[in-house]
Image (tube, rainbow, N blue to C red; front, side):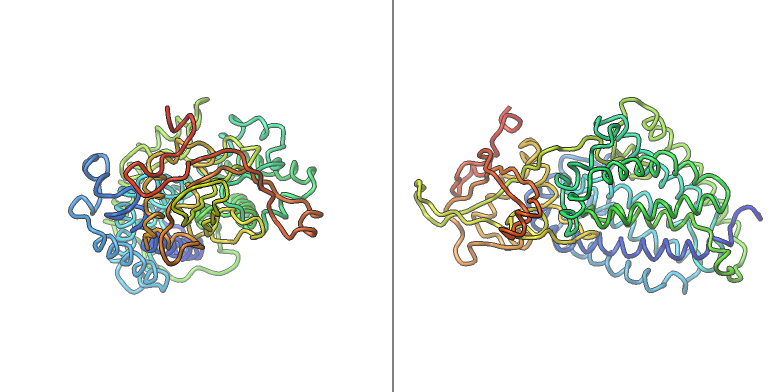
Length: 481
C-alpha cells in the first residue's frame, strides 16, 4: 500500500529513536542506582508489599513471576544494555521483526519497573515514556520507510502532552490567565536548576510575555501538527524551542527531552536530505500496524473525553499497560516555597543547646550558599518527593517514617541518595525535620552574602526522634487526621 509509508520522515524517525534510546538509558540507570533504598526488599516502600496488595490484572509485569533485589538489578541493568545497543544502531542489523523485538524489550522491562515503583514512580513522564516506547516498537527500522499511521499516533501523543498542559493551566490557577505565574514559578518549582535564579529575576513584562507565548505554544500550535508540511514541521520546531527554554529554567527529569523527541518525529527532512532507498513494508507488518492503530484509537476515548472535560485531570493512566494516557503540568502554582530540612544530632539527650547538623540532598534546595545543580534528564526521586512533602505532610506519610529510620541506622543505600551525610562514622542519636520558607536572594543580597537563597524557620515537621518503632511520623493536620 503506497499510503502506508512516508519516505520523507526517515531522518526524523532516526533522530526520534536515538533520543528515545538515550531517555531509556537514563530511566533504567535511575532505577538501577536508586531502587534498593526506595522500593527494594528493605526499601522505604518495598516492592514485595505492593505486589501482595495488587494482582496481574491491575499491575502486570515480570515481577509477578518473581521479585528479589538481585532480579530487579538484572532487569534494570539489562534495560541499560538494551538502550545502549539501540543507541548504537543494533536495530539496523536485524530483520524488521527483530528490530520490533529489540524495541519491545525495554518497554516491557520498564513497564515492570513502573508497576512496582509505587509513589516514587507516580510521575507523568513515566507513563509518557511507556506510551511513547510502545509506539516506537511499530515504527520500523532502516529496512522500511516509517509507517504513516505510527507517525500520526506519535503526533497524537505530542498533541495531548502540550494541549493537555495548556488546558489545565487555563482551567486552573488564575495567574495563568493573568499572565503572572512566572512571577513565582521559577522560585517555587519542584527542583530549580542553575539558571532558575536568573530566570526568576528577569523583568516582569518579560515573564508576562513568556506566559503568553506558552499559551500560544500549548493551545494553538499543537493543532497545527495535523496540518500538511511544512506547517506541521514548523509547529514541531516551535515546540522544541519552548522545551529547550524549559530545560534551561528547571529540572523536570526527562519530560522535556521526551517531548522534544516526539516533536522530532513530526519534522519532514526531505528538503534537507533525500531519503535512502527503502523496501516496501511486508503485509504482516501492515496488518500489525493497522491493528495497533485501531487499539490506540479505541483507548483514546477516555483521554480525549478528559481533555474536553471542565474537571480535567492530569497525568492519569486509563489502562494497566499505560498505552494511552492523559498529561498536564502545573495547573496551580505555589506562591511561596517551603522546604523540609532534615537534621541529626549525636547527642543522646536533647537540650536547648543541642547541635544539629543538616543532611544535604543532591538536587533540592538546602544550604542557602549552594547554587542548584542541573540533573535532568536524570531523575532524583527522593528530592522530588521532598518537595511534595513540604506542600503537605500527607504526601510524606507512606515513606517519611521509613526514611528517618534508615537515617538513624546510617543505611548505606539510603545515604547514597544524599549529597552529604553529616554522620559518616556512627549514626545519629536523633533526627528531626523542620519546615523553612525559602526565597531567592536579590542581586544585592547575593553580592553581600554569597547566598542564592534566604530561608526562614516556619514550623516543626518531625519532632526529634530516636531509633524506635514509632520513628518518622510527620506532623501537620494532613498527616495526623
